[in-house]
Length: 351
Image 1 (spheres, rainbow, N blue to C red):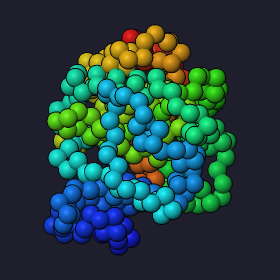
Image 2 (image 1 turned 180 degrees about the horizontal axis):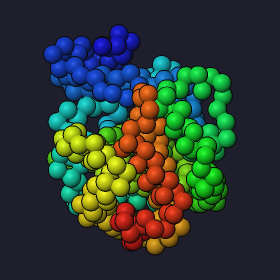
Image 3 (image 1 turned 180 degrees about the vertical axis):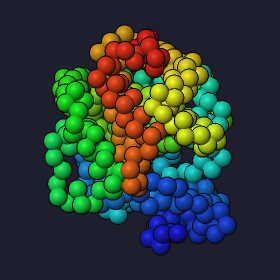
C-alpha cells in the first residue's frame, strides 16, 4: 500500500508524483515503495523504523558519507538521492531492471563471476579504513546466549508452537550453547573491520553494471566473519531447506521427509554450489590477502547460526517444526559445534 509520508517526501524533494501503474513494494522490515515519477526518475524509498534509527548501526555516519572519498573497484551501493534522518526516510535510485542474487541462485545457480565479484566487494569493504569515531561498534544482539537458558514470559506467550519447539531444542543442547559462547568470545577477540552486518542474498542486486549491495542500516565496525558467514548461511538455507522442501513437495512421499534424506539432498545441493562458493572465497582473498583459518572457522560458525536464525523466523508462523526445519537445525548445530569440518564443504579452503 502506498505510504503517504514517503510520497510527500518524494514530492518535496522535487521528484514529482509516483506514476501509479509503476509502483511496487518489497517484503522487509521497513516500509518501502518504488516506482517511476512524473519527473522521469526511477526511485526507491524506504522508511527505517524508529528502533533501527536509534540502533547500534545507525549511531554512526552512513556508509555513503564515509565512502565517497575513496575509490572502489568492486563494492557498489544505490545512488542516494535524498535523506530525512528525522523521519528515517531514505531515497535512492531504483534499479528497476535488476534481480537479486537470491533469485539468481534459485533460478539457475550463482555463476562463478558474480560470486567472485561479491567476494571481492566484501574483501574491499573489510579492507577499508574509516574514521572509527564516526562508526558504531556495539555488539549485535544475536546470537544470544540467554535464549539457551530462559525466555521472558512475554516471549514465551507470544511464541508459536513451532517457535517454542525451537527454543526447547536449543535449551536441551549444552554442546550447542557452548559452541555459541565460544563463537561470541572469538568474535570479541577478532580484529574489527567495516562490515555490512545484516547481509542477505536478497539485498544484493544484479544488473548489467555488476552487483549492488543494499540496506546498510546496520553498517558498523565488527568481525568480518559476520558478513562471510551470512553469505554462506544463505547458501546453506537454500540447499538444506528450500531445495529439500521443493523436492518433497514434488515427490509427495512421506519417506522423502526423513532427516537422512533431507540432509543428503542438502549435501548434493552444496556440491552443486561449491564452484560458486570457491569463487566467492577466491574473490575475497584477491582483495584481502593472507589466509586465516580462524576467520574461516568463525565464518562457518556464523553460517550455522544464520541457518538457525532462518529456521527461527519460519517457526514463528508454524504450529510445529517441519521435518525440513528439524534437519536444518541439526545442520546449523553441526556447523557451529564442528566448524573446522565445514571449511572444505563451504569452499573456504582459500580463506
